[in-house]
Length: 219
Image (cartoon, rainbow, N blue to C red; front, side):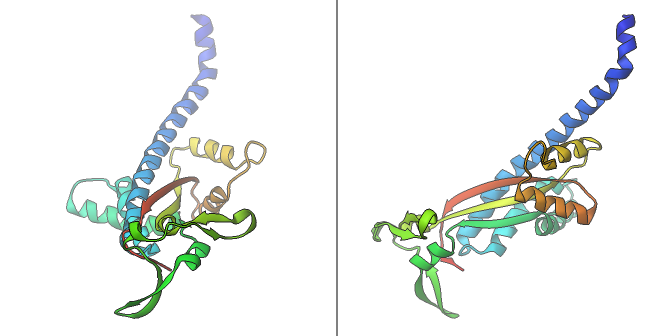
């Protein structure tokens, strides 16, 4: 018993740090789960609006709103919507992985709309269209795709999650940014730049979504 009491002062900092790390990772897990669900909502918004990045961002903001909700009153909901919209503008980056520029150029057609002629990837009657694969790209970037593949909207979202638990946030930041431990990703470097501008600490989270287009894709 005496030995336990003698070592307790030395164990308390370790126990406290461990508890802080557990709490912070709990927040990170919640944020990642919310991001995954929001990505599904975002990619669906894109499929319904010609792959519009603006609509994808709106869907993302709606999906991330639970992270900013602090009550059930109408004013709390409005506040959460505003905060989520602002955070989505500052803390996220949306990348359209498919169709990319090469795929769009290969499968686009000239269509007439009420606003005039535009280029788009056709979306109607896909089951009856030619399924022959085309070479898209060149060299190591060459892919063989058909019109059905071109109608799959795939996005990747990078979200900079603010770490709020004292000390634990700095420990995690040191782990993911120290080149002696792990090479920082470009996403993490972008979040570090955001942290340098705001004075906070951020962790880069990424999520991908894939869904078939419900409208012709446009650029």
